[in-house]
Image 1 (tube, rainbow, N blue to C red):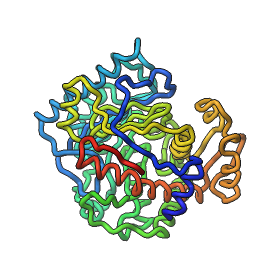
Image 2: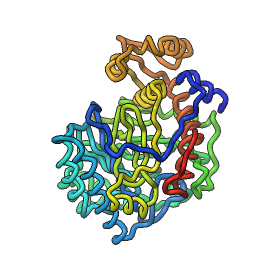
Image 3: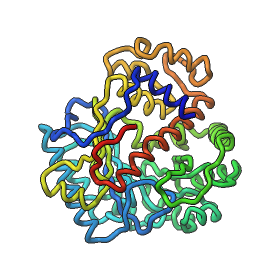
Image 4: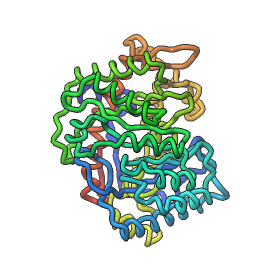
Length: 417
């Protein structure tokens, strides 16, 4: 698979050059000309560390968290002050870690964001099931949060056990969600766990929709090399069957597919911090994607706070895209939504999709990956699986390598992918 994926990348970028990340970065981020700009804020604190989780996190200590939030506010202020007036952005998402551990200061963070940005499409926040309590939900809603995503993983005790999680109190969770409603209540589920069956996955989806969710995300288990997880990865054939099976099940039930791994019970239920053309990231490990560059902040809480105290951006690594590299990145993450409008490509790049990748899209249709209806490309079940397979490969080949290094080095000298 590595040969095929490498050849695919080389062909689409029309280059044998690796994706090269270096410590250089712009002191002033050029986000003023970015349309459809999103915001992301990372809160890296957890009560305990799950063995399977690859994200930047550390055990919660109130003193450390408060010091981090102070630095975070300063980063938002410094970046926001470089733009004259308030920049219009689509959305703000909080991830982690467990952002609700900082619930007492979330309004302070959101107020600082609102001083520099106009959020047009809502604020989302990830929640641990333990934090789905009425007082916490009320505090989040009063702070301005409109969407929440609850990291369930599975409602089956045997999978909670192997993931090192506790049983979810679904009755208490449902009562809290009914008492404090949100526009979107998404629940994250994991598929491709050892010996997991389609029936068990269907049960998880129905339990989620029956206990307060109007949106579910069914993500694949990915075996990152730097985590402490001992779980055995499922075979390609088994994953394919599960992904097709849960997709067909959800569509047959009338749920709307909103991305490769997400389904909505209601038309306006949306939760995605990924499918955005450009975004600014604040906090440890947060990434920023602009027109011609991608940068990622240091994973170290201490070094992050130190950089901010010195009046510098906490950027660890940056890649300056070639035009073709940026196009491939745009296409990959746009197709995550399972559809693509060629007019959006032309608006962003100033050139037609047919001119740049017409032959490739014809081939994708002939191979049964895409179909075109009324000028819009839609991904088939076959295409969705191979997207998942490529994404899984690139995650392990690229993100696993990068994050593995950045967990150990606050500011690496160079990474080539």
